[in-house]
Structures are given as C-alpha cells and as structure tokens.
Amino acid sequence: MASIQKALVVGGGIGGMSAAITLRRCGVQVDLVDLDPQWRVYGAGITIAGATLRAFKALGILDEVVAHAYVGDGIQICDRSGQRLGIVPTPAAEEGIAGCGGIMRPLLHRILSQRTLRADVDVRLGMTVDRLDSGAEGVDVVFSDGKEARYDLVVGADGLFSRVRKLLFPSAPEPQYTGQSVWRIAARRPAEIERRHYFLGGPVKVGLTPVSADQMYMFLLETGPRRSVLGDAELESELAGLLRGCHGGPLHGILDRRVPGTGIVLRPLEGFLLPGPWHLGRSLLIGDAAHPTTPQLASGAGMAVEDALVLGEELQRAESVERALEGFMARRYERCRLVVENSLEIGRREQRRAPIEEQTQLVEQSLRVLAQPI
Ligand SMILES: Cc1cc2nc3c(=O)[nH]c(=O)nc-3n(C[C@H](O)[C@H](O)[C@H](O)COP(=O)(O)OP(=O)(O)OC[C@H]3O[C@@H](n4cnc5c(N)ncnc54)[C@H](O)[C@@H]3O)c2cc1C
Image 1 (cartoon, helix red, strand yellow):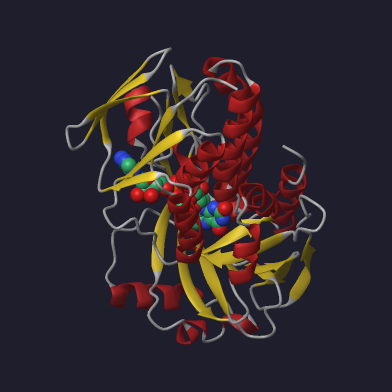
Image 2 (spheres, rainbow, N blue to C red):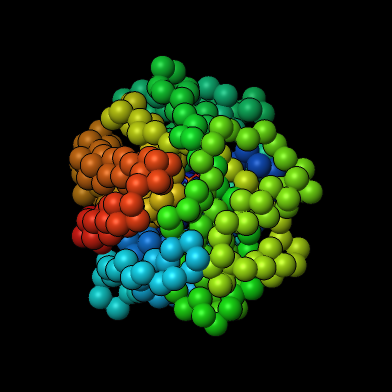
C-alpha cells in the first residue's frame, strides 16, 4: 500500500463522504471539511443507476439504501399524452442487485453522513481551504479559519464550483450552462407508477422516479435561456404552465399531490469534463469537481462513489501515491468522459426535439456500458 497516514477531504457531499469512508477503511486518518455549517442537502429525489447500486454495495450502504428507497428495473417510455411506447432496460451491474432505483437526497445524505461519523472521520463544518501547496511528498493547507496543517493526500470533492479545482488548476474551464433547466418536486406515488417513467416527444421532457413505496419525484427538463431566481409563487405558476401540454394520466394534477412540506427545486444544468490529469502533486479531484455531469444518465452520484472506491483500491495496490493517482486516472477518465459526454449529447437531442428513439437509444447504450465491471 502507498504510504499515507493522514488525508484531507474537501467537500462532504456524496463523493467526499464516500472517499472519507473508503480512506478510513484503508487505515488512513481523515479530516473532512464542508463549507456548509449545517451540512445540508436540498430536498429533491435522486435516481440511482444500476452501477450506482453496485458502488453502494462496495461502499457497504446498499442494504440501508434499499430499506429506504425504491429499487426496480426498466424505464417506461411514454409519449406526452401518457401512451406507453416501450421499456428501456436498465441492466443490473451485478447479479442480485436491481437495475436502478430512486431515493430522496436527504435520506441518502443521512445514511452517508452517519457512516462517515461512525468511521471516525473528523468532520469540520463551515470551513474550506484558502491555500494548498501540493507537492510530491505532501500538501500544506491553510484553512479558512487561518489554521494550517500538512497532509499526505488531499481529495477535492467540493462539487461543480470546486475551490480546490481553482487552487490546483487556475486555468481550468468553468462550468457552462447547457441550455436546459430542471424542475423537481416530490409527490405521492400512485400504484400505476410501478417503475421509472419518461414522457417524451413534447417541448419538455418529464420523468417520474419512485423513491419509496408511496412517494416519487417528478423532474421536468425545460429548454431555454438561463432563468433568474424565482419566488415560490412564480415557481408554482411557471411549472404549472410548463406542465400544461403534458396530458399523461399520472401527470394530471401532480402539483396537487406534492409531499407536504416539500418545495419546487429549479436548477440550471451545467456540465464539463476537466482534461486529465485530475491530480497535482498529492492532491486529487473527484466527483463533480472533476467531471460535473447533467443528469440525463442519472449517473453523476455513481461516478463520485466509484471514484472514491477506485482511489482506495489503487492506494492499496500501488507502492507510491504517485502510481496510485496514475492508476486512478487510467481507470476513471474514459468512464467519466462517457457519462459527461453522452449526458450532454442526450440533452442536445432533447433540445432539438429529436425523435424519441434517438433519445432513448443513447440512454440504453450508455447504461449497458456502465453496467460493465469497472
Ligand atoms: C439537477 C441535477 C440532477 C441530478 N440528478 C442526478 C440523479 O438523478 N442521479 C445521479 O446519480 N446524479 C444526479 N446528478 C448529479 C449528482 O448530483 C452529482 O454528480 C453528485 O452529487 C456529485 O457529488 P459530489 O460529492 O462530487 O458533489 P456535491 O454533491 O455537489 O457535493 C459537494 C460538497 O462540497 C461542499 N462544498 C462546496 N464548496 C466547498 C468548498 N469551497 N469547501 C468545502 N466544501 C465545499 C458542498 O457543501 C457539498 O457538501 C444531478 C445533478 C443535477 C445538477
């Protein structure tokens, strides 16, 4: 195993917590800092791809996720009137594991954060890094509270607008708006929503993902210029307007079936692939800090967890940190590139309203590749 005593993880999202848990398993002492003093996550649902379920198993959280989530198979494709057209298969990544699923983000966050704390990770909230001096033998860090420390490894898992990325690679590209925004709500799940659904062929793409026995979330992808921040009343009326053309049975009256206490979440879509390598000296970027993706393949979270697992494997296998980081890149770049580029391409097809088969074909093909061993 590469010699590492002490690591810092910057960012306590899905990727950062997975990295912290994995590094602890390798016997490394781990500090984790997150900018958010409350360590919160917004209240939308998240779709789980088959490969993500496999990664959850390797991380040791699959049983707990399954106990709180929906797991199943296939995506029911419908036209915008709700007419059923066919099912896109969601291949299982491992025997005995379902092909896909869905869970509310706060629940997934709770499962991961409890595991992180139980693994004896030193979590410090409301904190970030101000300076990183990442050399071949170690990383000198200055935190935002002025404290200083030296680490054998720094993992930058601080998401789309990563500060670690800016510190390591100041001329890296910035995230670009793709021309689409996504609206999400949590709603009661009717019996007819037995699996994930896509409603295609209209000016907007709508999807439903069950997240438990009696709840689901709806996403609506809209094409247009980037929206400004909207108040609650505007969110409600704008979303109602966008749904007007969708007559699909389960979509009818969906705004009235929202889960009490949950709101409408609107986000512009941004994505890009940072050219490799994603490491400098003894610092490495993982998850959205390196390969932020749009959600068309529902695989961003899975890629972040896989990054963490592969980092752990490579550190255990290699004789030096340098070799481990090279091994990491060799295993991660192509797979993450496929997720980012195919997701962006599906988004482009949605925006130009390509025939339904042209949209679903690339989803099906990509999921087949992602189910392969990593
Ligand atoms: C609209 C939308 C829908 C999506 N839907 C899905 C889906 O259905 N399925 C799926 O698999 N993926 C989905 N994704 C992608 C998925 O959410 C991300 O790929 C995943 O969350 C990446 O995890 P991460 O840990 O790298 O980053 P994040 O989850 O963004 O976590 C980053 C963490 O870093 C912290 N942080 C930020 N800045 C700093 C800083 N300077 N210092 C310290 N901490 C900091 C944040 O507080 C946060 O806790 C979606 C993405 C979007 C935009």
